[in-house]
Image (spheres, helix red, strand yellow):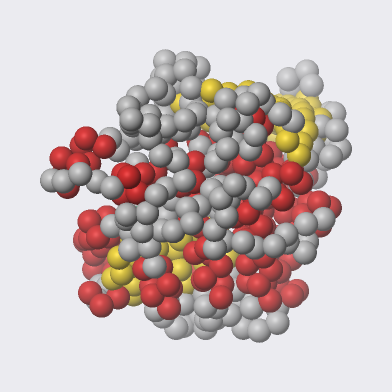
Length: 451
Ligand SMILES: NC(=O)c1ccc[n+]([C@@H]2O[C@H](COP(=O)([O-])OP(=O)(O)OC[C@H]3O[C@@H](n4cnc5c(N)ncnc54)[C@H](O)[C@@H]3O)[C@@H](O)[C@H]2O)c1
């Protein structure tokens, strides 16, 4: 078992029922307002730092710069200079002087986040999710408002660290947004409200899908050709991060979290146990690292109801990114078209349209909370939904029944002990360049101890 510097103790609020409560009503933070956050004046300039300047981070920075009022991007940090330069160029083209980051406020490398966070009132955390707990804890320590992308952790230790930092953020009255943007999408908000108001009775089962063709591969050969040299193993895994669990969490965590989170939101709870199966049918290339290409998990909630979940990255199959629920009085499609019927299929309610791009809306809402000191802390449900995805991965990798308690309290820490370009990542290729893959029935935890 690898241990690293990231050794948070079990959260004091590990009691499951506390989590259910707080996870469902994260907005209760306002009543705990103890001290003002780093910034709360409606007319002032909000200084933003971007940590992780890739596709989503650049998008999130653009959305932050598009909110009402004076906002400036003042600092950037990335592990790689080329990613930061590309992002800065794009943001400057779109936002001009609002994105005029001085050279001395651009930071590169593993520790870059600390310096960038120090420059800002609000920070955007959008690196691969393995780093999120450490970056979030640092932002809260420095007293900064946060927008962090999902998932917020890829293992139990990370979830615990985020939950602990979320408590600190509450005490400091910091506003925290999490990139589970369906919470800011009008169709979802309205249909979930209808369900919470009892339109289809109690929810007895749910289905959640992210079945699609998969995502990018940043292949070693191409990366080395562009670099004009061999990459260290650490550089390679950091560039091709999707395929390594310590960075990505597997696609059940990195992507399917959106759908799992929607069902948790509807239920006002998170599952307490799960079992499932998964594997790799087509993801067998030299650059496909160690993750699976499909997972199917049966999650059980404390009230005896189930969520049936599938995620698949295989082309040419049935595709769906959606969430559905069955209630005692009717059923609902929570995803678009956001509608409810009775059990005979007769329409009860249907979303009438409206609302703006949820990626923009989530920033509008967060900045409104920052400027007007409104309650806003999404870290806890971000953490519990990340935990749901982690326990699902543990179940498919091991073939065992996994409880939320076990996943949360797991000692397994996927982070390398040392972060550096010459350091060894937690998983290494064999002489053919292939990585060991979790084997259900043999794998004990699912990440470090594969067999
Ligand atoms: N909410 C959504 O719908 C949505 C959509 C896409 C991505 N995301 C999330 O956004 C995050 C980033 O995804 P992406 O698609 O932008 O990936 P990306 O590869 O385009 O960007 C990640 C960036 O982080 C940098 N980075 C890596 N490690 C770093 C470190 N330790 N310190 C600083 N920078 C570091 C990389 O060099 C890269 O520039 C992921 O968590 C992903 O799940 C969310």
